[in-house]
Image (cartoon, rainbow, N blue to C red; front, side, top):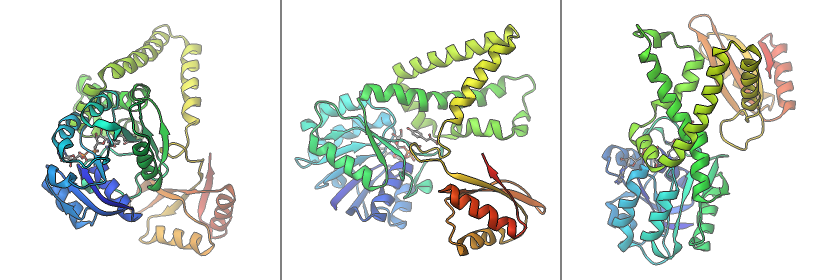
Length: 363
Ligand SMILES: NC(=O)C1=CN([C@@H]2O[C@H](COP(=O)(O)OP(=O)(O)OC[C@H]3O[C@@H](n4cnc5c(N)ncnc54)[C@H](O)[C@@H]3O)[C@@H](O)[C@H]2O)C=CC1
Ligand SMILES: O=C(O)C(=O)Cc1ccc(O)cc1
């Protein structure tokens, strides 16, 4: 158990970490530090942090200092706290970019006690309000040690990430930044550009209102914090521009195929992408195995979800996840239920059919 853990920035990520540490009783005292008093208030009220303090008081005697602020603030915060750390205090961050941050952190925090970290889980919301103790469950947690990293510090952070349910993968900071640029930063850039593209359309007013699921799915992340994403693009500008180059190549190939009315080429590009996309695990979080889904159509009645859950629960069938796909008020809706095994999926279908509930296997 960690005696005293300081979390700088108790927004979505720092708040989730605080909740996760408490949930698993991994830290005796968690002290939060944040310039946003609202987030501190919420974190204290939720019992996520036990105390709040300014930077100096927060990190004094802490065994672990965890930075969860926008990446543009990391270096300045490290400079401000470095003189108040005990020898051997482990310092880690949760920022989305690594190379520059790690280079600078290793200059500031001597002895290899800084370990770069990046949990590959999150949301488009920010602030403590959206914090979730299970955010890191089954998520990849990337660590970016270098030859300067102290092995005990690395081990400490690895064990912590594993203890909150994450799967740790180590990679060099430069590799991290290229991977993150391609699978995370570029998608954000594209999502933002897609939303802005609508505004470029002649007579665009009102067009957004017609957006169906596809537009919503591809642009969800565009609602993310502009401050956080500005810092990410600035900090990882080299790799983001590389990723943009890959994207430009893909777009140009498609543009040419459409210009040439090249039906085979368009089909080839789309089916290549479709196959790659279908190969992703159903859950957005990395390494989870497939889940086995059943789609249920039910009338719109109060208590209908409780009825479904009760029916399955009484039969000992565990619901792994549940989502309302569509609903028409007063009529009915479609609900997707996920199970961990094909056996449970089959049992659920048989049970629901016995009760004359419309359902089908998905996928
Ligand atoms: N949002 C996401 O999905 C993910 C974010 N990250 C990274 O985690 C870090 C935190 O992001 P979020 O928690 O989403 O942002 P957030 O906006 O929810 O929380 C950041 C918190 O840091 C505080 N803060 C800012 N400057 C500060 C300073 N100088 N001193 C003390 N507190 C300060 C803010 O007031 C805020 O409460 C960022 O570096 C981001 O790149 C990493 C993975 C996922
Ligand atoms: O909202 C989502 O789906 C995300 O992908 C969140 C996210 C944002 C930034 C990161 O560095 C990692 C994950």
